[in-house]
Image (tube, rainbow, N blue to C red):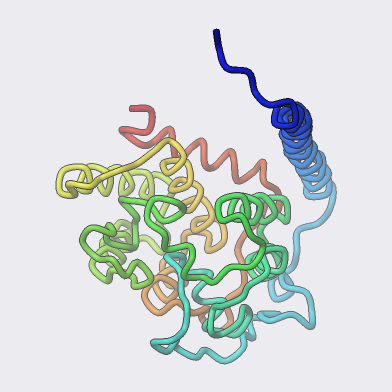
Amino acid sequence: MPELLPLRVAATVLVKTPGALLSGLWSVLKTIGGLTAISLWDIVLVLINTFTFKKKVGSVIPPGLPGHGGAWPAFVPPTSSDSRSPCPVLNAMANHGILPRNGRDINLDELAKKINQTCNIAPTFCKSVSTAIRDTFGRNIIDLGDLCSPNVIEHEASLTREDFYFQPDVTRPSVPLCKRLLALAKDRPTITPADLSHFSSIRRAESKANNPHFYMTTGHKFFGSANCAVLYEVFAGRVDDIEIMLLEERFRDGWEPRFVYHSTRSLQMLISLLRAGLEDEWA
């Protein structure tokens, strides 16, 4: 005969179980509600973009904000004690003082706002990214260096960083990789989405063949394509802008975002195009 639980223990289990169920249900509903709100917000942005004029050159970033008219705050290279990430744009924002120069104690809501203002990327996309980071780390304050955690947001086969197995300091750009990426333009002033898909396929094949700890999930593949989409749209594929960003992690004097379609849906279309051009995306 199975041993019976003491009455007060059984009562505790019964009390806690409904609470846990309600907490889980509330978490699911909150997630669904948040995604629905972001989707509706993005539809509004699509309509605004469709029926309003594009921003004029020189005024993509509003007056009073860093980068208005191509005037960026002073660039200061990071010191050995500063925190940096695998993302060149986030590092550049810290190097220019748009984010804390030491790269520490960054509020994720403020991070989403700063990315939107600096890169003219849809606030819905920025909000989705900050929410994903918050869910990953379970807190709203991070250091840029937190994003270096292997196989969380940092991933294998990066276009600008060596795999963690070969170079544990993923805050440092790989000059050879960056130059190989830029060389895809050949005599053209820009790199294309097809170039980015092609190089992504090459990098995945190289990492898979040479890295004994190679690990890449479907999520990592999608995130890698999203990075390519943002790089292409924000800089319009322009080699002169991208070169300075990737190798020096700073904004070129006079540069302003080239992003045209200010919504998450437009980015998703480009992400789909990039993924379609990858040889192993669905493998």
